[in-house]
Length: 79
Image (tube, rainbow, N blue to C red; front, side, top):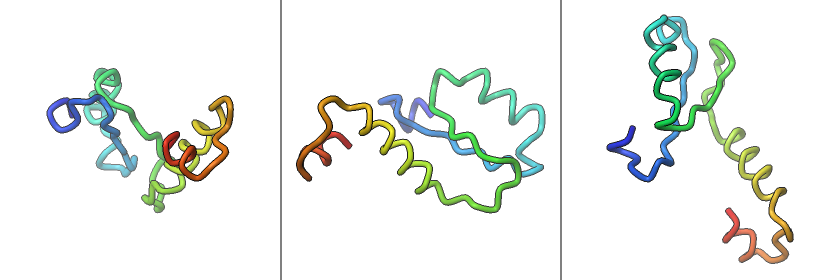
């Protein structure tokens, strides 16, 4: 992760499928959690589209901005 995303903005997505839920594959991300962000996913979730999670994350981040963006360009800059 540090090689591919040296800026520290890498994100790891684990689908929690049975083969990916072994002790080794759950322990490693916990031990290296400072190296990347981890999307938490419901166990065995059939939905692997992260767009809704990204939208929610961006929405919450923009809601925290004070003062709120007033123009399209302000919003684009904030995102």
